[in-house]
Length: 368
Image 1 (spheres, rainbow, N blue to C red):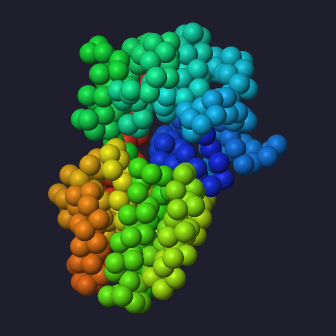
Image 2: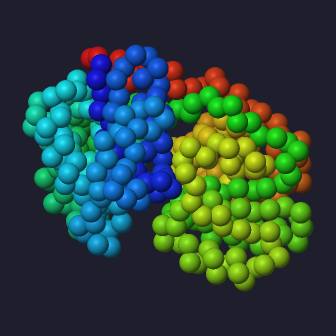
């Protein structure tokens, strides 16, 4: 099959996070099974010469334009992408849109539908009931009709399924699709020391400042520990920098953004992975941490909490600072426990989270 995958935004620093990583992982897995894949979307940060491929997957990228200032990714558009779809769409058998309430993926899906090419939607927890006044006209014009016309709408968790029904109605063609993680040659070296790593966007929902405060509270007890933040700024960068400047003796540092293909290597240098996010549907960063053998610390509202609990691959806490501090403390105090949880996470990544099962679900869905 010739498959087009549409994403909102691709940047050198991976600003858009998990959905792009998921799209690339799917594309590589399907390519290995003999299919032809192209990833299309908006780009920012590449100048006049964006890449024409990523990790062996063809790419068609077009300049991102901010048409609704102050709305973040939702205000982005890519007019040239729409023109490209109009001219190229008939060369594809099916289109997989990694959709959000934005002016890149939804207009692209509408053009695909008008051209009569079958399409599927995967929303990554980004389409749910919203009180934002801008969502009402957008849902009426684009979101709801596209949800109803998609051949399949993929969801990650029961909560996302309920949210999609609340937005689009009861007659959606819903199908569960987990995120997977490729097998990697990167493996954590237990001799690298004690580093607690936050690797995610510095956005309010991710709560990097909670991580910083946890580091402050534990610094005197573990003077040799390092607390590192890696990721692009999405609203919390200045506050994180101020907090670090006010705590020079805590072993805290923010390294800035990192190219997506470097995350596995960077995680393999750490000892513990922490994501204090709330309402995180199915974070790829947690799966990638497990795949390199890191114990993970996440909150109860994370969609991966049941998996982490069941496999014993980390600690699930409530959303309080005290619980996060206690979880990090317990793993720093017991390296043996941390290593055992890391081994369990690695085994779970190998046996339950591989990309072959994801590719099989996609093949079946596309073929049907």
